[in-house]
Length: 207
Image 1 (cartoon, rainbow, N blue to C red):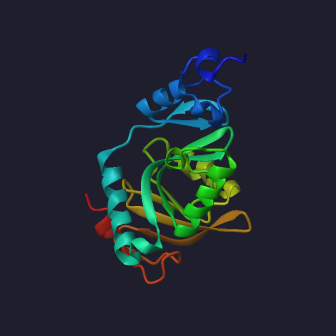
Image 2: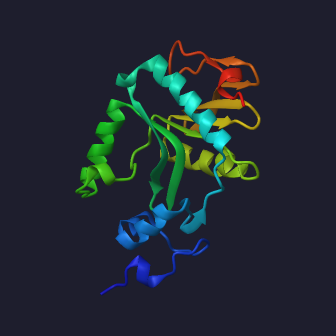
């Protein structure tokens, strides 16, 4: 009988050979949820520490979107595991799923043989992913995840930097991300994803 992931290798950051299916092992999943991890090209990787200001700023942004769109348009969740591919499992700071996304997620989970749909990681490209780059680790969001999400087909990717008071809203066209709108400081920006929405960065990124 083949060894389980928990038996075949130690759950140690930097070890190779990890895949999304390994997280189905209850022992591995328990360790996974005890920390902040991702699987990056098959390597178990720790995420940088989260800062209060990042979470605070992200929640301000989310609240303004929800206030504008209403709950019927979709919903957000934070710290979401997304199976980009078998050797890439990202933990997004926030993801927005429309009702159509949720149906596609349900269909994908059933097709994958998942019995507990509520405990299935995201298997489809969300309509929107938001990341807050951590100081010193900006390249992970600006390069690695930028490439991952484009290849996965995530149509909207926002990069919110509370330390620089910036918000970059990207849209996917022809498999490549392009600037939709970008703001800094006290700018007002209007993302095309949510018509009529005005985001005042001075309010969102205030300390």
